[in-house]
Length: 208
Ligand code: GRF
Image (cartoon, rainbow, N blue to C red; front, side, top):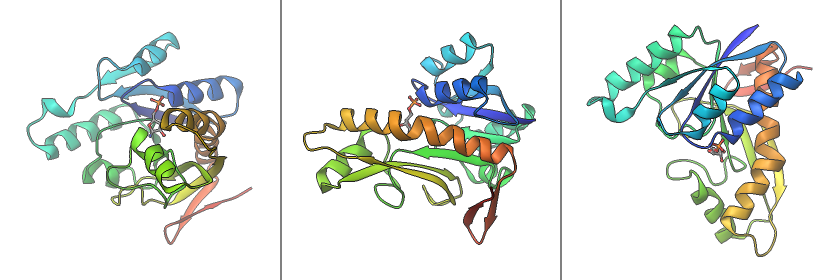
């Protein structure tokens, strides 16, 4: 059974999808053992508490130097014996130490089809605003491993979602969450926990 540590900052709907997927058996061979938040007010922490999951808070602003924050976050995750780290709306940049300590063991969910609408500045509603401005007819979500390139790690699963004329960023965000993010993030986590993902030359290869 693999230990999953989930990093959050906000509402935590993706965390909820993971909790529900663990309960219903969609996540095989994995257990969420701790939820770490960058924000003590995050509702995601409440979701964890309601489900009896241990929580911790680490704030970037409590550290003057980024390197010290990076080291503390790495130590905190290590202290929870994490096999897998999941970024479920974690709004703080990860540093070299944590990324190298968990190479191909950190999964992020991005609310667009990478390599579209990704990279620096593409977070939250900005992603959907850019997609609508471009007039794309499909967008979607991507579950991927995290490396030192922003949204540049190996892609594990993607799911397309229709963009409709008249969508607002909020409407599109909600449709992408419901139809894609909340499905593919637990699926990617389950594949990882069953050792079904191999990374070959920066490509994630999924075995049946
Ligand atoms: C999601 O849109 C996710 O794709 C992005 O951050 C948002 C988190 O939402 N990385 P929630 O906190 O899971 O509700």
